[in-house]
Image (cartoon, rainbow, N blue to C red; front, side, top):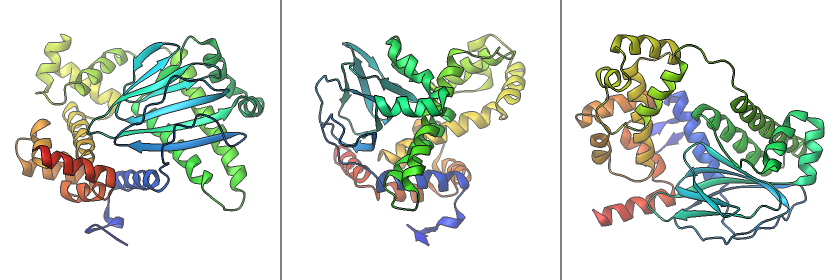
Length: 326
């Protein structure tokens, strides 16, 4: 099987998974509708991706809404209070709660998963899997509707969502049973993550410091980053940082920074930005060093990677608009 100039079987495992996820999203992308009533009795699930978002007024409904933003600048208004969502956020809106999503139209598409589930169906499956009741209780308390997850947690949640979407479009044997299992799996996982965030285990020595360093790195990827700078920022020796970072993450500081920069580069490629602009933004001294690092990480060159995403009409349109501006 040939795919835009390279053989799929030669791709890295990471890129194969990434391409599969993108294929799934394109395959099952829903046409956005302002409809806010369920047509199915138990649940509905959608993946939306829009260049320009058609606003929906403040509304409420008699079912639960789970909202998982993927990209775009989004605010969620719940009971009159607006909150800007950040990557890896999820929103749970219980029945009877006024809300709406607000987004700024930009060159970056507004993508999200939306999962609706009736109160009766959620109650029914919570009776089978009691752990699911935790998110029902959290949502009903009206004290918290927005939940933040780690990147790895959010990736796992997305994989469960994609599995459900795939089964939702399936006519295979026992598809209805699989959909039931997928929903319980998804909601149990979300309940576990929220419970563990609410009831953290005693932190290991140095874990808080590592989390602060990781947050600092991920918000300064377009700046000069080094052991020396981290040492100055956190008032510890660079040798101490190197030791605890390797111990807690399994990677050197340099490798972690490069990995995160390459992930950001990949995101920018998908948004249609030029390769020359991208490699300069994230500290790669020249294109050849960027080319080698990217190929080592993803198994394909930046241009090959770009060609995959430019097959997506939304990405292609943004790239054409960008060229017009340039």
